[in-house]
Length: 144
Length: 144
DNA sequence: ATATGTGCAAAGTCTTTGCTCGATA
DNA sequence: TATCGAGCAAAGACTTTGCACATAT
View 1 (cartoon, chains in turn blue, yellow, orange, cyan):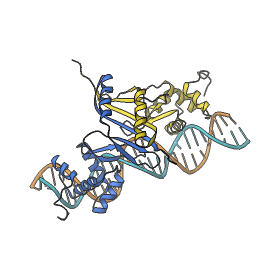
View 2: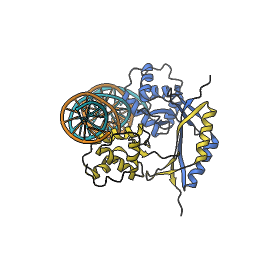
View 3: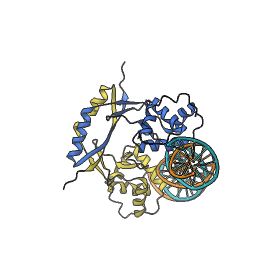
View 4: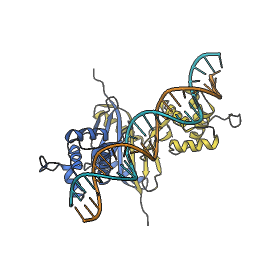
């Protein structure tokens, strides 16, 4: 990889370095792609985006990298149906997903009250909550 | 299939008949297995349980049957991680899952208030809620 | 220099499907 | 009997992995 565009580290690249990961050219590209992605791409899509920046990347590497980043807590893996895993950069603070069943688009939203609520739910069942997910499958309200 | 044990229809078999499904011996067995299962088995496990009752069943048929029953609304498909789909009989009234991360066990619970709450959430975002899922990943509280 | 990452293609999982035979309504 | 289901094995879709080579630290 050349030096151009390298002085500015992407957000994810910084996180990778903090975690002590060896930064290869491929990982830098994938990190950059992830930093610029504000949706929930699957591996195939990440591979497509990464290849646009650098065609020296194999899909196997994308698979290996997302797994690595997930283990490091940098990425989150989701299953929104459709058979392929989808990824997004871990954000601080829980957020939820509403999936538009007609378009497949995912809308994110937060609800701090709900976060407290589910902790109480778990406690009532005798558990300490580690993680949770709330997913709404819905259809846009028709306005005529 | 012989007549033995046939006079008593299982709960699921009754539902299948109501939906107008052709009841083959295999479907009857799978229906019986499902009626007796109060957990969240995957296809492999259903196949194992069905084979115990009748070894004339192929795993392909189990796949075809769970898909059919899911389409008919008799079964629900879940993804609790682990790569394979897991099934449970549809119950009236939404319920939620708490997954014990140490044992993998799934605890079901209901919360009618929460059902209303998420409908409001969706509405605020401009959507009509079709389905939703809430899953808690948690660890049993230590008492010493 | 050494440990680790990558590409490629093969293999692994889970699931679906084409075809022929068999069973249900 | 005509239609639909089942078994079997092959194919599909997504993901992982073994091996030889390349690269970061």
